[in-house]
Image (tube, rainbow, N blue to C red; front, side):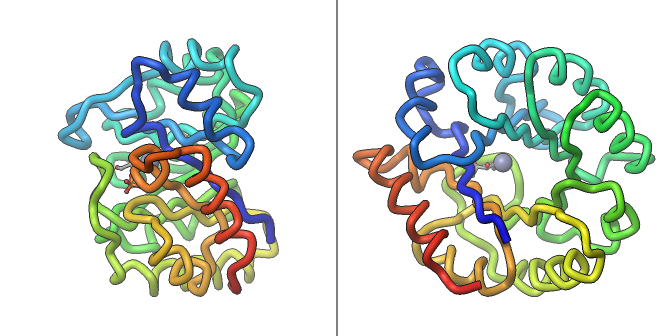
Length: 221
Ligand code: DX5
Ligand code: ZN
């Protein structure tokens, strides 16, 4: 199983976005970009123009977490701007299959995300066309929140379903991922780790990212 570290720039210094990304590039596999619309979540961040602006500054995979009411509307601009993958929250989608097909048609890796209280059953019917399942371990919207241990059984169930499918589907955790919670996520079967404040609020983000990379690579899962 491939394990990946995806630093989230949500709580980085966004006025220096390219420099902040550069700090963590050696340790990062993906760069996680939190697109929020102020409706699906109470916070408002950035959209396709910022993703496009970052694109020339890094060769890394741009993993876009779409916390918006209408993710399908953003897909063409994200693809045009150089995004690599999108995770769309299943909660506002009236037709997740159509949204996944739209992403794939644009050449984007396609994922579905679930809030802590959203059952896994909402995404399992689409496993045959998913590249990623994101099980949120906090309520989406803000960095720096405490990890919700109640999500661990859902992560384990997702791992079992992915294994049974025989497909390569990334299983991502996002929210409150830190040195204490990474081992629990590995144990449950997560392979892709979003870390925001644990890296960008550290005194030395580059060193923190390296430490997370080692922790993730070395842990039993
Ligand atoms: C929150 C975002 C996260 C956020 C995680 O809704 O989706 O990606 O940056 O931040 P931490 O790691 O601080 O919980
Ligand atoms: Zn995120």
